[in-house]
Image (cartoon, rainbow, N blue to C red; front, side, top):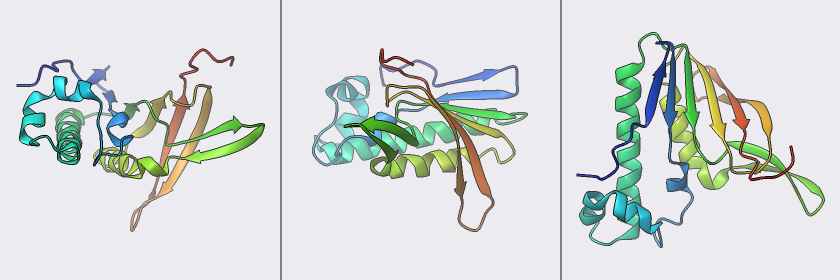
Length: 166
């Protein structure tokens, strides 16, 4: 049994569901490495992977998605706002070497796809995404056109300044 026992979601006032995601799972070159803390936190998953970093990370990704579907499915009644909290933004702007750079998280495309699938479990909610990685405050609305469906609007807030000035 996993040593990780904290709750990864919180229902507030019966109409808001806050779900904590591990976007770091998507940040590593899974076939080569993973943070060693994951092996400590999820020894049963690590043992099933037989020492293969790629297999271990794929199993963790499947585990996270399975738990998210379970949490959201069991708590979606009456939800008007679905809030995801993660480390990495979906998109962001930053200044590098004096130039403004747009950063679409292509390396996290699989993560963004998973988020869209999870948001879709509650079709009529307002969607929010709270994150931190770029070390400065940003607020924006992301519109994503889904294949053969209406578009989805996500209000994203990047609030982790990492000590940088606002």
